[in-house]
Length: 259
Image 1 (cartoon, rainbow, N blue to C red):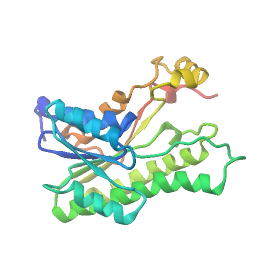
Image 2: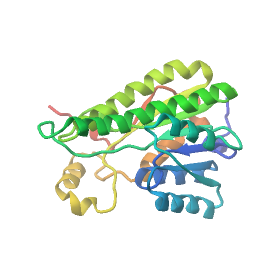
Image 3: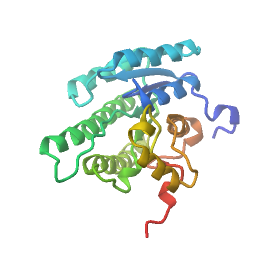
């Protein structure tokens, strides 16, 4: 057991892949893992300019980073992602952050709306997790996988039945993968964020932001860095005996009674 406190969150010598790292939470995750010393593989699908900026910021801070593009809902492209991210050495950390979050009421939702969310959020989760876990097993290396779920995987919100369902499935998949891959020294955990600040959210949804602040015991929106700090913990030696867990990062909203 590592008892050196200074090393418990140290990722020097590790390689981390973050999917959907071009902006928002994904960018914060990539930067935080880079701050901890990891070589960060910044994945993007379409947002190349934003992803390049994230990688540049990591390098400007003295870290190492490179970009990889892939459509994560395509088996062949994920296989290519695994190969590209593993060049020069296998990944030690994989963070599944890429997802979509549209708003549709059940009454208005089409089958294509439903499929877009479940296909994008769950197929990518399965393909990326399986691809990197099998590569880690082949190489005989330990691996930490962290999935970015949502508190909506535990309690739904209006207009998000497809998204909430996909995140609930992600939480169960996290537990199932932890169960099956544990004997291979592969840990699988999830972080379930609440409402996280993004550019323009106060102007675009003022009533929702105020409602959240009124109900959150800590009285504020989350910041992307709040999620990043939880991911760092689950990726680092400090959490070496934690797998199959879901860490809720929501300012205490889930603790509020609903009755």
